[in-house]
Length: 335
Image (cartoon, rainbow, N blue to C red; front, side, top):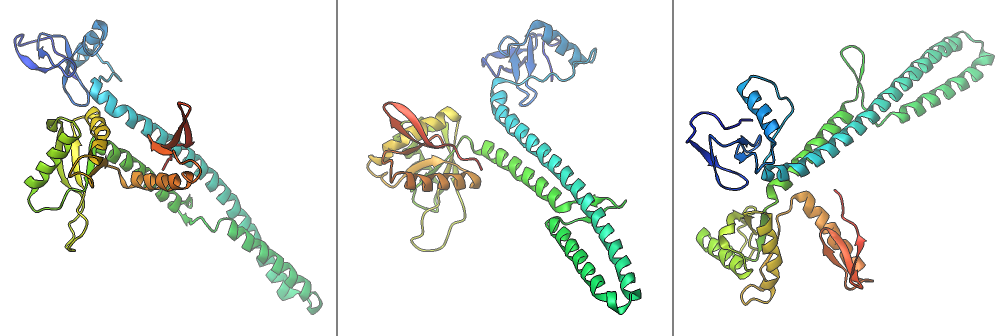
C-alpha cells in the first residue's frame, strides 16, 4: 500500500479509480492493495487520521498492520469470493473433525483386533493340547471368535490405512478426497468469477473468416439495443468438427460490465421477432457445473408444468406469479 502527498508536487500519478479526476502527488490519495490504482482519500472515504497512519507506515516510521484498502470495483469483485472461501473453510473444518473421530474409532478397532488375535493364539494352543473329547467345544469357540473378527473388519473395510513413519495411522484416501474437493470448489469459484461478464451466442453460421463472425456479432448486439463498443467478440467455443452440415459452434463475447451483460440479456428477446435472427439466441456463459444445474432445473420445469402451466425459470429458481405475488416452486439448486 502506498500514499501520495509528498515530493514532486506537480507530478500527476494517474486518474482516481472512483471519480476519474487526476491524482497529483500533492493530493491526499492512497493506492488499492489489489489493482494498485490511486484513489483520493475523500473518494475512498478514508479519514485524515487513518491516512496519516498509513502515510507513516509507507515511510517506515511506524507499523500499521492488518489494514488493507480496496477500491470500490475490487471490493465488489472479492466480496463474493471471500464468502465462498469462508464457506469452504467451514466445510474443511467440519471434515477434519469427522476425520479425527474416524481415526479415533479406527484406533479402538485396531486394539480390539489385537486382543482377538491374542485370544485365537491361546485357543489354538488349547486345541493342540486338549483331549479328543474337548476338541468340539474348542473348535466352536474358535469359530465364534473368527466371526467377531470378520464383523470388526467390515466396520472399517471402507477405510484404507497404512502405518506411518512412527507407527501412526495415515488415512490417505480421506485426505486426498478432501483436498481434491476443496481444489475443485476453489477452481469453480475462480472460473465463475472469470466468466461473470461473458455471454454466448447461438446460431451464428460457422465461417473461416473471423471478420464475418465479428460483423454478425455487432449486428446482433445492435439489434438488442446495446452499444457495440461495450461488447467485444472473444471467439468460438470448442473445436470445429469436419462433419458436413454439423451444428455451428457457439460464439463467446465479453461485456464491459455486469450492467451491459444484463442489458444484452434483457434485449435478447427482440431477436425472436427480428427478421433474420429467428434461430439466434443469447445465454450466460456457464461453467460445466452450472450447466449441470441448469439442466436439472429445466428437467424439473418440464415435470412441474404438467400441473403449473405458467411456471417459469427466474434467477435460478422455478416460480409462478399468483395474484401479483412471486411464488417459488423449486428453490435455487446448489452443486
